[in-house]
Image (cartoon, rainbow, N blue to C red; front, side):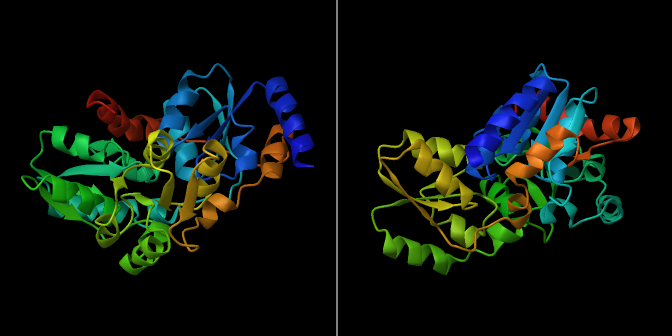
Length: 304
């Protein structure tokens, strides 16, 4: 039974001095046993201040790497080793290095959804909620934004006074959603507000009533006086909001808005991690950590 397994996990995490982090795209049964749930970078900050010496990340690899960079003294495990991120992994360091050489007067702004190796090439890191603020705040007039073209476009359109180079990268799940999907959803639910993640295509984002990070979308829906919402991000958020706000109605923008890498992690994976029979410990070279964390520190200094 799910409840019995959850009770065993709660006992084991106390016995093993373990903090469990669950990204918002995890299933409800995992979120219920987590110490913290939320967006990836917020979870990393929570792990840094948590008293436990061990951390299990229920999310994808770059998130576990970020936890390790901010808490190098802690033992960090990725609950399921198969959980990667196509956006974070679609560009390698050599490719970005060549672009940097061709455009030496451009500051590199890296979305947090990047590998640790790519972060070593960045001047500053951003989250979906801080990208606009950080890009405005940095002194550079020219910006190479990696890797998401959709988030980059969202920022570029709102800071016309700066020059941007954008790459053809992004989240496959968010990017597959088209304008037609929004129009169909709005026709089916004419009284619903449309809340969308900026990783979606510009023509999709342009139809939104609210644009923001996963946590931003959830907070907006919880506080809004409206009763119906179309959710333009990973479909697990629909379920989470249904639990949080049972008096409101939530509809997925599309049945296709699913992250398979997030879905690969199960409650049993967490259980096996705690028993020492599963997961993967994130081991990172000290020099890599020191180099990669610089762009994160720059983000914090600029007001994340």
